[in-house]
Length: 110
Image 1 (cartoon, rainbow, N blue to C red):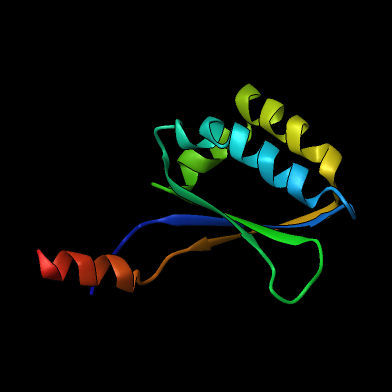
Image 2 (image 1 turned 90 degrees about the horizontal axis):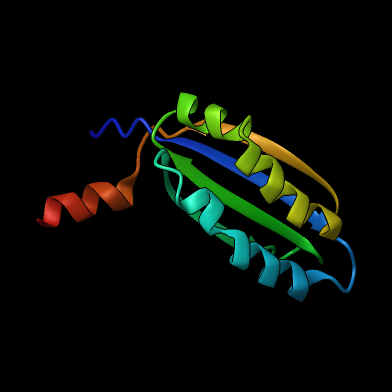
């Protein structure tokens, strides 16, 4: 049983109708702002298979303190400004990862 200590952030964003492809392009173009932060260990953009215009942004962080430091940074404010024009609303959920079976299985194969 691995103790991953990963702090996960999930954003649910409702994108304005007709702006989905542009949102995807802009998200990808600014993703390095998050990815280059030393506390960030991964990020994903997913489109809902069930709800039109709904996207999920997942990011994993080494710990909550690292995420909170980024969340309050000027870099994050600038990042948000670039994505904000595409969304009508959104929510954020934070989580402590208990098990990461993919990582456990990968490590077991080594």
